[in-house]
Amino acid sequence: MLLKFLAFGLLWRLVGNPFLALLILLIILYVLDRRFIGLTPNIFKPFQLRRRASRLRTELHANPHHTSAKLELARNLLQRNKFQEALPYLEQALPIMEDSADVHYEIGLCYLKLGDLKKGESFMLQAVELNPRVKYGEAYLRLGEALAPVAPERAAQLIEQFRDLHTSSVEAYYRLGLLYQQLGRGNDAKATFREALDIYRGLPRYSRRQQRRWAMLARFK
Image 1 (tube, rainbow, N blue to C red):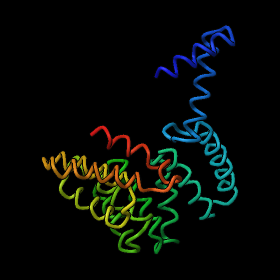
Image 2 (cartoon, rainbow, N blue to C red; image 1 turned 90 degrees about the vertical axis):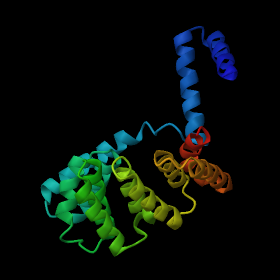
Image 3 (cartoon, one colour; image 1 turned 120 degrees about the vertical axis):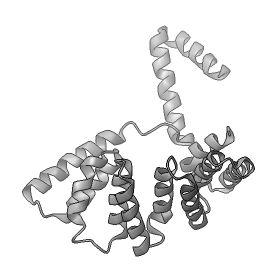
């Protein structure tokens, strides 16, 4: 924090304007975070996704039966958390891709995020039946995350399954620790948060950047 104040003071002296100095400092901090830490989002990505979505909608207007375009548009919308908009495109693609674990997973994710836990669980379990390692086991994690408020014991079992499939996921250990806390299993929670940090320390540099948020959250537990 002291370094930030010193940097702000130096920039203020250099540019002669506190607001401009603050803006420059924020830009520098953002660039450093994106390069080395990864806690802040990519501010350009939403614009890129919207531009691509517009092109895909134009393609679908010209060819409404283009399944690949429907899937790409649905996944574009999922990245922007537009689950209600993504769902119809995925459901239209499903009859043609009924053996796709990924499509079942994505439909299940939409239903979970929209609050329909019964349908969401059904599609997630179908995805796992088609491919137990679909999305590197993400089906277990997202289903456990959704069920945590209403069925914490079931949620803990699901996240434990994800952890067993994806042992390098710091997020899985963090979420599992939260569930153990919710279930009153304090010692298990503490041990799981410690495991999350141990796993993070052992990750290669490129993975640490992706998992850093969960490691920091686990550190404060």
